[in-house]
Length: 221
Image (cartoon, helix red, strand yellow):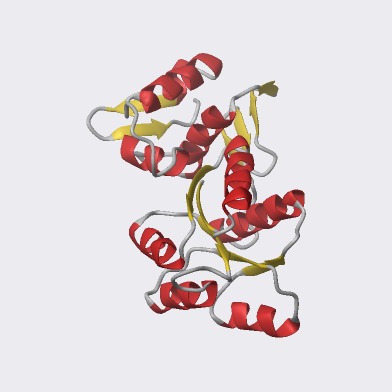
């Protein structure tokens, strides 16, 4: 999943980005409200972590502008303030959740995962079963024929994109957008490297290449 952090406290923003990247997310960071609004409008994000006190535009205005434009991306608001008025104002502008600084990183990750599960569908199971392949997107565990398969964070994230759209063709560009961050300027063939690694660890025929279009996760016969 691809996340955008809009936070003007640079040390905090970079610390959060480092931790969330280690969790397997693709993370972009900006430190200004106007830039955050532009990036959120132009980019494809699965969730925004949005501070309230920002230069340019504050978080309330960024959130309100996104909702007014029809963007339904989940928004987790952060603030150093503490009070019912602030929480109510944040939720009234369209935020999905609210976290007051200082907060536990563990709690932040739990809130993010909860919002992403909600976005996938109310009551939807995080466990996806395709033949003898089972992928638990909440616990980030993969089982093949009952045996657990150890994947790196990036390998899991690539597989997750295919699992969530099993049977559909997922383009290389879509995988890059969701697994690697906005600033990635390396070889786009990096996707092929990770798909090859997944085929070695899982099963060669599980991920099919659709020439000129992308990849499709096949259900094992």
